[in-house]
Image (cartoon, rainbow, N blue to C red; front, top):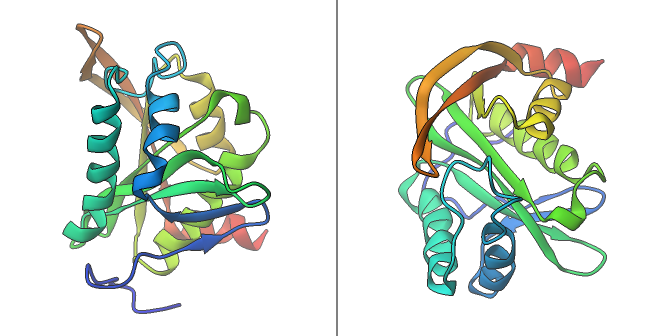
Length: 193
């Protein structure tokens, strides 16, 4: 493992899995981000309004890139290795270095779901988080009706902690979010098994 306190001046960490390259978001990813984030039905549990204009995808890409520059986290673009297509993103953000924790988030293109690609990506970023960022805890917050996200989190070993009442607001209403967490020792036990 490298220095447990990754510097904001470090190069963006590229990760490789059997089917994916996890890399920094690039300007040429805007159209792929727009396609995913403008799909109202698919993004219903993402936590923000779906985007409706291409410039919003540009702003989204810039925000994802800014996390690394600010030292507050990472958002990886998921590039499929067989064809170079950007199929989604995943990230560790709201990084509290003194508390050694952060939040995880992810989304994937609808036609790429159900293939184990996000599981593959999130396993890689959790390894990076616990081994290279020095994290002790990773938190996932999901809408109670987002069954796919809950299934992924629990499969990875995240434990349900409780409900954050009306924590999020989108679609003109407040939403409860389920809180899940994964601790470093739990991840290491799972990885060793």
